[in-house]
Image (cartoon, rainbow, N blue to C red):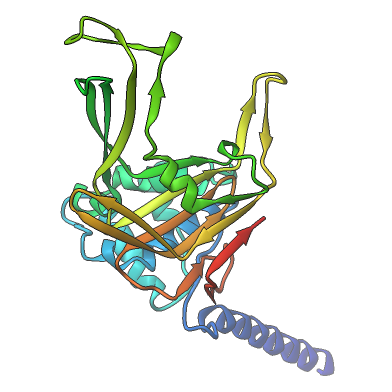
Length: 291
């Protein structure tokens, strides 16, 4: 009889412990919830947390046009109430191996490709590339859309990489002369030329990919840059349509560093989506050295 009573008390304690553990996951102190990790899907969780904290995309989701829009909206509704899983998301974006690590930026593109055009448009910009000869004849002009702009950390010898300078370098003019001169149809000869690009359509959400890994052709292997990264609170860019100001609201560090800016919308915090259970918020400072 005593043994039976002890077993009953142990079962009650175990049930109570499980309930407390469940409640701890469901009631985080910060008022926000996290996503369960299916195996190695922390990269996916971080992207989904960023999208959840991006109001520009919420109203654009069209569940009637795309199943991905529907599942993403359902996930956002669940995240307002409790910690939840991501299996339906991995199913619709066709992630087969949940134990294989991927990069967050790659995952973001996978999601955007599956979303309705009106939803993915929040991340879409356009760059126009122009090459002109020394007499200002247009040799090449083409406009391409983008979701993510890559920045290579090897483009500078400085110990700390500046995201602001790296972003501005995208728009610097490059010159061709000597053996690198290009042929101009109007001049009917090879001539010195300049090439550059302009952002003709600014995305609501500007996403920069900082490439920490590069390929060394001398060793035929990849190497990682260990320099620090200086992430500014704002980015500004002059254009034909006026001056554009982007405000930092999130960054993710996985294989590469993904930095998110939003146009003219002040957001004071970064949302860190954790793989297990509760997520946290932290206040931004003016600049962020990222190791």
